[in-house]
Length: 397
Image 1 (tube, one colour):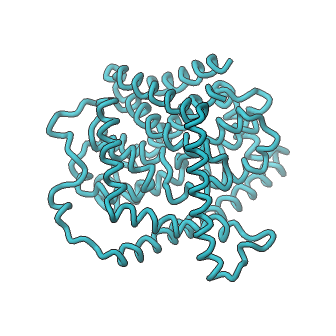
Image 2 (cartoon, rainbow, N blue to C red):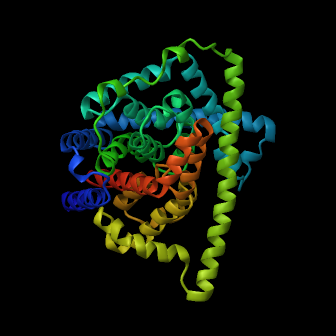
Image 3 (cartoon, helix red, strand yellow):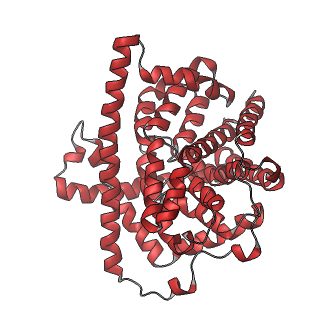
């Protein structure tokens, strides 16, 4: 049955992509097939081989240790409050992000991350035939996050077409940031977090190939960093540390504020719907998403519950959905947990439209307006990418 649901899930994604494509005749099948095969091989390797599971265990242990170091800093400031029974989510999960942000800053400063991104991006470019900039954004979004990644491409934003901008933004919204991976791993099975991050890179490009096909001229396929950018004065090490601290703190504060607002809003809406219609708004969303949940491999008996979580992520954000999912996961099958977990590992939600639009607009006003003009289609594409990733992982559970 796993193979049947793989086919139905793929058919759904490709049918939606074909129907809403900018240029159906321009869809290139070969790179799509190559990226699908790469996703299947990587998913199998991570989830079903001894080496893959060992890597997952190592990654999980690494982030558990790093989060522990982060908690030490929190402990000094808050005097052990994070270790008290019932201690708050903000202290346990969000504030350690500050330390993860510092590590990302250091790795970027000593050129480790740029090296990794460059050569993985070049390898993917050979695989899918897409531009260097497209592959750079696809890979680097998984490290820097959906808004921060555009800071590294600000010199190219004014030169690219609206079509290319859509592809870049789809990759950004389909990714997550390394700075929040440790937080995700405290709430979801680490192996699904890791596999979700990896397959989403390909899923975003596959969906972009369907919805937004185009061919680049050789002169348009430039590298990310220009010669002028390379010769700019480099900030000092401790300046970088200070900025990384503030960046991590901003992420923690923003995520915390969003959780307060969205959870309160969802609770109010649920109560209003329950009062008027005797059914919660989240349950209604569950029924809407249930058919999609079913065709990608979730048992029908769990499809409404799973669909409700998937829809919650879409209308709020992944943290709100993950917290709701965590409360009900004990009553769900392993297959449902795997599929929903991978679906949740991305920034594809309504609020991300504003985040990405704002990030691009701050760097280039005209391009920011272009992002706003295709905002809903951007959300549609990134959600299809999440569905595709979840479908593929379901094959191996």
